[in-house]
Length: 252
Ligand code: NAP
Image (cartoon, rainbow, N blue to C red):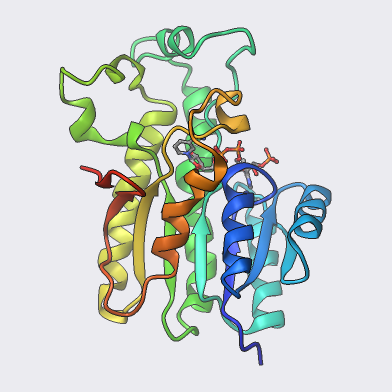
């Protein structure tokens, strides 16, 4: 029987997910490094150390999700922590296109439904599919934890405020996918409240990663901090929250 707590981080082969995996290992956990490309997962786990194990996991592929859950069940018999970090920001933004220009081409009036579906498939439905597959394993752990990596860009309260300068970026593709993720996070938290499994959303802040062409202002160490803190909270901790490392609670 595995003594160390077992965590799965989706999309952990690079960026914030890789840093979350590193930080959880340094806190003494066994970490499954979810990666849709197995070779990249092997490389990432090798970079982290012996307590990191690569796991092929494409959150949009039901067969991959089922195989991952089966593997965890066989190897560890339970899952203590699930960090749902994998996400994409778009599939069609040209490398030379500014975020503002992409936003202008993805307004409610002109967005490609295929583009919206592709991003929601990963950021929303992928999260729900992984939740459904991993929940039986989380229920076998003494104090299961789920952390969904969201974004302040999905906050309806912030985007409803005309004084918010980032408001023109709010649109149906990535920002609204995070709004939907927040909604299902709350639904998961409510579903699992009575069982003591905590489900929380976190915002990493604007972090230098591939997701934004390395334009972010925070380091991955800063971006990973809140997810790791919330994942390791004890029994008396809250569920159904949305927080950032330095800003505290973010309005839904
Ligand atoms: P990133 O460096 O692009 O990493 C995203 C990860 O998700 C990659 O490992 C990627 O795999 C993986 N992924 C994408 N689609 C997947 C799929 N279908 N199945 C499995 N894995 C998949 O981005 P990041 O900035 O670290 O993003 C991590 C999280 O932070 C995301 O949820 C993002 O929305 C959130 N966030 C980021 C920022 C920011 O400023 N960076 C701000 C707010 C929120 P590949 O390597 O194979 O592409």
